[in-house]
Amino acid sequence: ITKNISATTTYNYSKFVQYFNDSNSTGNALYSAGLFDISQDGLENDVVFGGTGAVSAFDNNKALKWKYNINSYSGYNHSKFIQFWNSSDTGHDLYSAGMFDTNGNGKEDSIVFGSNGSVYAFNSRGYNIWNYSFSSVSTSYVYDIEVFNRGTGYNDTIAIIDRNGTANGSLIILDKDGNKLCNTSDLGTATAIAVGDFNEDGNKSEVVVGEGAYLVSRTISAFYSNCTQIWSNSVPAGIVFELETGDLDNDGYYDDVIVAATGVVVLYDGFLLVY
Image (cartoon, rainbow, N blue to C red; front, side, top):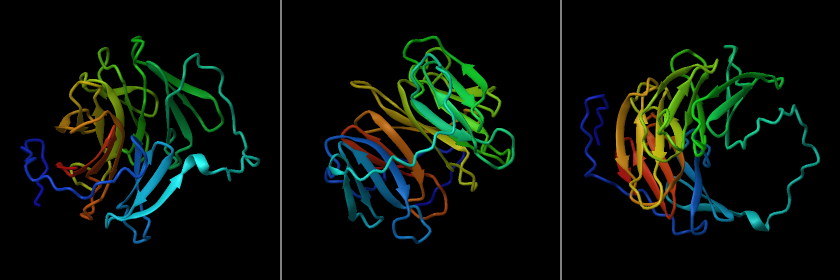
């Protein structure tokens, strides 16, 4: 497959290729996914899925390597947990979190939390350094946060999603000081985001957004860090619960997307759908 990614590219979705199909090893629904290096070959091209009461891992040869049943495990040792700090009550439930570099020292030691219509940032000592409010809509839940380097040299750019983007759009990108850099239009019911390298320049500085709800169309869409759309494609079925990016085809770029949705696992090889 030859890929020439540019803002004017017309994508060809006719050559969909299935990598593998998980035979329901993790229960009836998948809620999360991640890429890791199980074979220790330096490539994050193995997949782990979180399902109902279980987590399962597959290598890049499609083989199930292990399955972890959560409900049957009781070996956790919580006796050595140390609390760094505790914030005051924000007055809202918190749904997501991310760590970022607020002072350009190369350390991601500040934390941003996503709530309902707002995000709250704290430094490593627990001081509230800024808040950003973007919507008064009661369903504007920030279900996911990603931090990345948009070209500043540091992981100081914060991407958040608004589940209800009617007020300020579905994807909002902030700088390290809580200033809005840009936002997209309302994409629908935004549920998950991930950062990848979709223009294949060697930098993970583009954002992919998953959206959709029951009985409506579901899509994933990729955007540059200035919120300009790169591509968009539909998801065959299911609500998108989690997105991850990686290099599944070993081409050296994090331009492949794993979508964990209700009843289906979808993989995108660059811009090609794999399911």
